[in-house]
Amino acid sequence: MLQSTQTIEYTLEDKLRTFPRIDYGIETVTCGQKYQLWERIGFTRAEDMIKSVLIAYQKGRQERHILVCTTGKSEIDFREVAYELSLSDEEAETLTARLFDYEIEEITGKKRGEVSPLIEESRLEGLEVVYFTRELMRISDKIYDVPLSLRESVLVSAADLFSILKERSSKYKTFSHDGSYRFKDDKKPDTADDFKFSVLDGWRKVRKEGEKFSFYGTKIIHGSDTYILKQPRTKKTDSKSKKEGCIAVLLDEDGKKVKREDGREYRTILPVSYGLVEQMYKTHLFRKSSADWFTRQKFISRKE
Image (cartoon, rainbow, N blue to C red; front, side, top):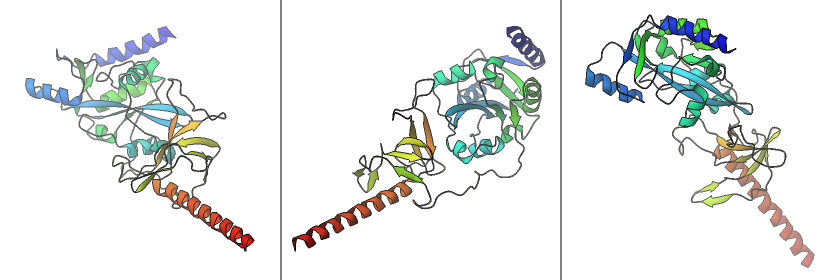
């Protein structure tokens, strides 16, 4: 197995030798730092740089990882990633690029700033896909700076690089869709009656915070699984979220929090908006107050 890995790496290295290499003599971590370096030294041999971002998402009860490669000044479009990789809406909702440095190094074998599509085969096996974005491939003969380390790079076009890497592994993919991207338009619940979940703790964790309620810690059953809710978010309270939803921690059969291999809580995002939970809670309060009223009426009638 080791011999096979060495052969593949040598073949890749051999092909890359035909492209120019640059030793800047200065380490840079971010694209911004490298752009500043280019301006300072008058570097013009590359037209742009490839930025590689490790993103994670939840598939069932497992965390999966995708390496997304785009241009240095482009933002990752999660809608494109979700569409091109055929992620479900639930999976797309959990896409995140907020990974710790130690996670990036553990998964890719590279430090932040060194990560690129040129990933070792042993690390490649741990990724779902290495995806070249539409923006990156839009001008396929454009020359890009691709980091080999914090101070060294190879200069190559996106088309040549993708061609070399695609021969190496089927895990390298690029866009197939030429129109606009959007999340799948699967029907989402509009009211609390449409979204089927039940509360296990009688809403005992609910607190009033200003004009709103805090549902943090409320235990629910959704489908066949049990969760503890964090605070449901809205577009107004979380401008970075593309959709409403609620982070929830999965519980096992004993009511304990399920842990991932790295020891962290297993979290997912449920399609539960603040409005839906609030509506269910107010319905609960109304039914409770109505029941209390009838109880009082019965008590009064008995006294009379």
